[in-house]
Length: 357
Ligand SMILES: Cc1cc2nc3c(=O)[nH]c(=O)nc-3n(C[C@H](O)[C@H](O)[C@H](O)COP(=O)(O)O)c2cc1C
Image (cartoon, rainbow, N blue to C red):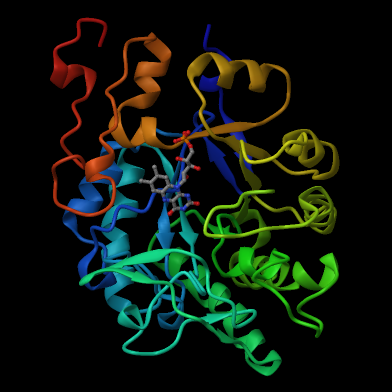
């Protein structure tokens, strides 16, 4: 049944050995924001993916949020990531770093007492988990127009460091309510200058981040993830179809590695719109199993399918999809933080003694 999934595909400058991507997943296991040996073991275990996309990784100290997530803005982090990229490459996989500036989804606890930045001084509803427990999301500081180019430039610098660390490319995290997605939105972005209002203005930050990374390492090594219509992290967009149409149109002809859609949140055919307008490779994600992945690839709706929680719980997911055996069940209790339990101890088929392996 699974045929296309296991065929190679080219994403910009990078050729994958199969069409299975590991979706980006925050795991909160990099104390000091530096990737470590346990992180390298975890990613290496999953290196039979055609493409591994890392957890959200901070491109700049001003963009920190969440507990013990890794960064990509200093030499220690580059050295830590080198262990990770080597481990994935040793298995034949390619690996992109997901660059995530959390913007208002942060807290002074993560910023040495500083105030998180955002397009506008609008707090996200809800709490954020800090080392001393859940705390209400703070009211962020609205970025001055004059500061914004420097924040955009951090995506270019992080992309350069990513290549230095052995990454095959970077994915700009434009999804799920973090800084670029805050700019895109119509509830977190209330600006009246060239960074807010019209869809062209709201998309300027995101497209600027893509352009900065492309200028640094080449567009063929840069992907973009968006989540049209998602309400995650208290985000709203009054016309997600128009937003996606604008982004896909703006990215035409750039030679980007890929566009990656987080599915499920919209009541319009986001994948179809992206496919029709965007002229580069498309990655789809959200609730996929082998049969649905194969069907969407066969129908030409996507070039690559990303698997999240199923990859988290199955280090040998490609082999399991190929052989059709049962999958381990992910344990949400160990998703965000902790040690090797629920991280590097999910068994492979071989370890579980399954004969099909
Ligand atoms: C533990 C966990 C952490 C996640 N962290 C991120 C992240 O850092 N960046 C991101 O873009 N999406 C993140 N996601 C969303 C996944 O990439 C994916 O979109 C979601 O799990 C749906 O795919 P699935 O149905 O295959 O699991 C996370 C999901 C999980 C389960």
